[in-house]
Length: 249
Image 1 (cartoon, rainbow, N blue to C red):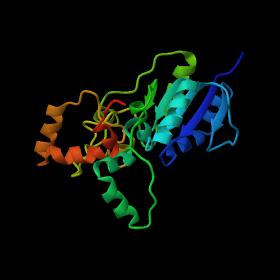
Image 2 (tube, one colour):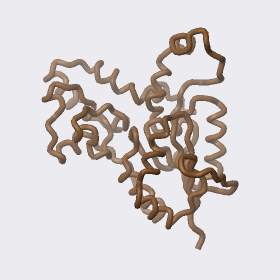
Image 3 (cartoon, rainbow, N blue to C red):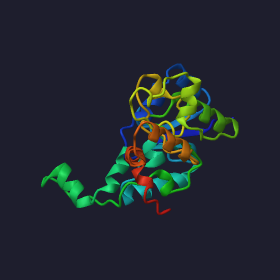
């Protein structure tokens, strides 16, 4: 029986999500017993010229060259998974879409720069059709394993669309607002098991906004703590800047 051909690719990102997979330990060995890992730059140098059963693509798309590479990957892939915040929402890279390019270049590089072709930061689904999306910065290893198991088994899988606050309550965390901190848990997509809050940090919204946020509830929380909605909107843009002007291309 031919085993599925699985590949991992990266675009503009820190490759932290690939490291999450590479660091799975024994679970990664279990995966390798079920699939043929044909490309994965973090752990191997081999290349594959055939068709991919499952392609995991990490990173945001920042140039026409990258977009063309992604389109070719899509054509060669039976299943395409966008994984990690950069791929799913544009990630931190997307913040540059809010800044005029000339100002961005002069601020970062001064007069020591060379021209590069770019059309702004895009998430992967803004360029090609995506079959599945794994959110998070970085991805949650347990969620990755659940998705891969579902794909290989032909089982339906959907990313969580509950707010992080739901998971916080299950984990019996003290609300960050009651601790004097501003947290994006009320409007951020869960699935991470409230990872950051469990470890004493606030939710930064790396998984993007839930599809149907409880706006009234969120506003009530903000009012109770003397905060303005604009503050939350600004913080949410740290990971979702590429989605603010989605032109559907």
